[in-house]
Length: 118
Image 1: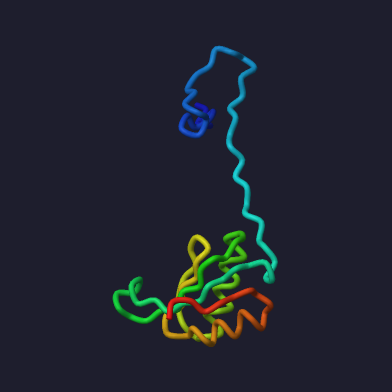
Image 2 (image 1 turned 60 degrees about the vertical axis):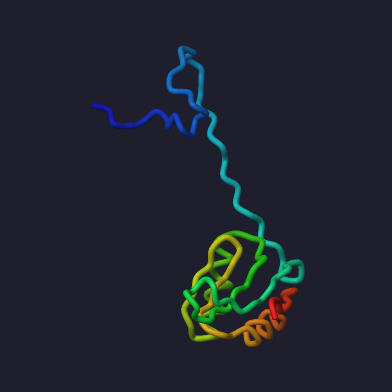
């Protein structure tokens, strides 16, 4: 018994079966985002109280690049602040009020960063 699947119809544009013996499923290729160099990034650093149920957290928004590079920058910021946090969809959240410390670090690394939100 062969358990190998011939293709996922949801990913193949709805084609479930074809009578054409030469037909091949066309899958969309997933392209990784190209990470902009630090001097071309336009980052905003702000203090946020809404995301963590009223607790203070520092939010860095505007990162353009791959998920791996975002995770790497988030790890550096979390290590710098000795705090937890996460990185999702171009945003980095670091638990605690480290707005100035993170801003200084980003500027030192050559990122184009600004303080935002009062």
